[in-house]
Each structure stands twice: as structure tokens, then as C-alpha cells.
Length: 299
Image (tube, rainbow, N blue to C red):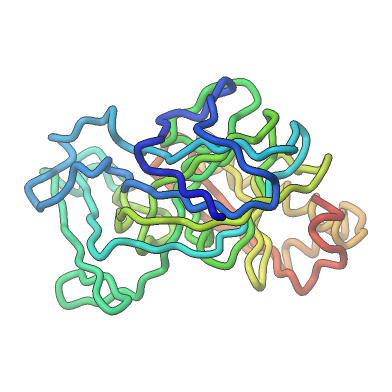
């Protein structure tokens, strides 16, 4: 029977001493019931950021301990299904986002979701449900759920959606998985500080790779592998994501560093996931067609 984790069980920080709300055997399917990143506080256009209780922002449902998963393993999270509610919201304001001087007041838009589209006035945006916050207990420090790093967290990477597998490095026994911050749709960068923030449910399968991890989250989609890196500046994140992609090509294609570096310049797309959180997130996208070994052999 699939276990359902209610949204009332949630955290606001990923820390080394997380207490699991439940445990499940490795190989289980789990459904996470998720509140939106604004903590359910935005219901109308008059509910703007300046009036919110920020202690209730970015709840992550969980954490769930996965039995048999140990420090040094990789937790494999297969995202099977994301069901979202029929209405979302996006928010913006002064001193926020990539253009801090663009606005002189706080604004909120309520966004109906109808027939698979987010409605922005007469513009229809096809939904692409994704998980913004997903992570495990870190190695040492504590990270607010709004911050991403090696443990995952607020990566805001739009490819973390249905049909993908996320490989998270495990730093504490049991992994302690939690997630939240669903988006119905979001552009790379999340430039005004929010996507289409929405509540919903995420069904995942949980597995492990024993004794192997790369130290940063790895995402596998149908056609690509993405290395996800979050650091204090986007320049640092882009540089580290590039370095990691070269190392992946060395291991997955049995190449020298020189050849892997040149191949990365030919085939790897280095891009941005988000620019608005305390740590900025970059991704290096490697076509799966050029990899010569399966993920569980080079992770």
C-alpha cells in the first residue's frame, strides 16, 4: 500500500538532526501532499508579499526515512506523477528578483488552471508541473528550505517533473527526504521570484544506489542527464556545473580530461535554473546519447 504523507507534517529547514515523520522500505512508492510555497496565505490579488508571515513560507512535506539507505549512497527518487490544484498564484515586488528596481509596489496575480493551461489574462501557458524544493538531510550545516546546495533543497529546476529520476547524495542514514514548492509552470531563472505557485500531490518511487554518489544532485530525463549545482553566486554555480559535467564525461565515456573538456564544449549545455534564491542554481545538460555507461556505473 502506498504511504501518503500529509502536508501537516512539514519542515522549514534541512538539517543534520531531522526527525522522520515516518519510514518506508527501500523500493516503496510514497505520495507527498504538498502546500504551495506561500504557505496557503495567498488566496486573492490583495494578498501580497509584504503582508505574509514569512515563517510559513516554503514548507516541505516530510521528512521520510528510507530504510536501508546509508550515508555514501545515492537516493533515487523517481517522480511518477504530479497532481496540481486548479488555481495558482505568482507574486512580485520591489527589491525582489533579477530586476530589483523594476517595480514600486507589491503585486499578486491569481492564475486559474484550466484544461491543462495556466491562464495569464488572455495568454495560455501549457502546464509543466515541477517540484521546486526536494532534498535530504545535509552533511553538516542547516539549510532553510528556500536554499539549495549539495543536499538538493530549493533547486527550482524545471526539469524536475514527471517521468524523471533524481539522484540525491545521501549524507545521513535514511536520507530523510522532504519536498514542496510545486509550480504549475516556471521559466528558467524564476526571474521575478516566483513561478506559478500551487499546491498538489507528488507520487514518487524510492530506490538507492549503494556506495556511489557524485556529491551534487543528478537528474535523468528521457534524453539528458543534468548536473545541478547551487552556490552563492551564479558564476560559481556555472563554473562548478561545468567542472562536474567534464568529470561525468570522463567517467561515463572513459575519456581523458582533455577530451572530456573538448566534448563538453561541443555537446553540453550549461544553463540557469534559478537566479533569485540565497544560493543560485545552474545546470549542465549532457545528452544521454553520448554517454557510454549507465548511470549506476559512473554516479
